[in-house]
Image (cartoon, rainbow, N blue to C red; front, side, top):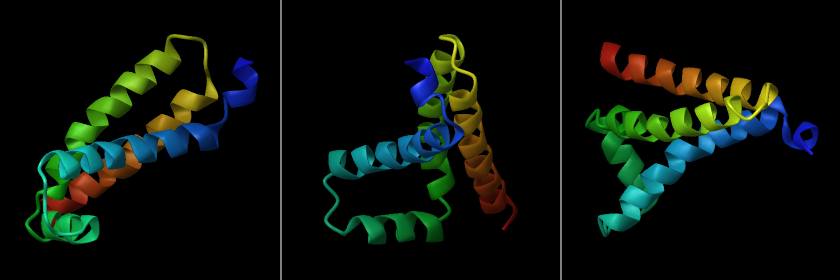
Amino acid sequence: MIQKIDKHWLGFSIGMLIPLSILLVIYFEENIIDSFIIFITDLFQHRLLSAFIRIGLIGNLAIFLLTFNTGFTKLPRGILMATIIYGLFIVYQFIW
């Protein structure tokens, strides 16, 4: 059973979706009138998107540790790849 879902691409997909889903929860929780795309664009323009993504990466850390400690080998690597991509975006936001 573990081998069926122990895939790099699945881990990468999970790692990319967790921070976005946390952004979506924040969007709905704050009752923002603008559309989600405008919300993301405003966060990007005001250099706040990286702060919200860092909050989402805590979710990635939790899923990474859960899968790593339960015997998965490829799934945590995919999550780590997604986290590194988000990390590079955060560095980009700080530099420019």
